[in-house]
Length: 68
Image: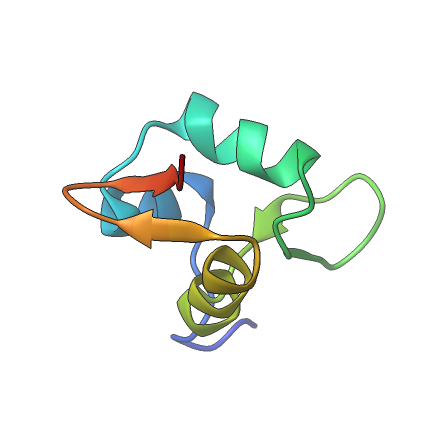
C-alpha cells in the first residue's frame, strides 16, 4: 500500500491548482511519477514535482507556468 506522500493524478492536479490535462502535458515533458507496474496508475510526490518544476524553469504565480 502506498503511503500518504503519494498522490494520484486527480489529487496531484488539485494540490497544484492545475487541470489533469495540464498535468499530463507536464508528464510528457518529463515530470517525475511512479508506477507499481507498466499498466498501473501513476502516482506523484509533490516534493519531487516542485523540485522538477523549479529545475525546468517553471514559476508559481496562481498556478505553475513556464517562465517567458
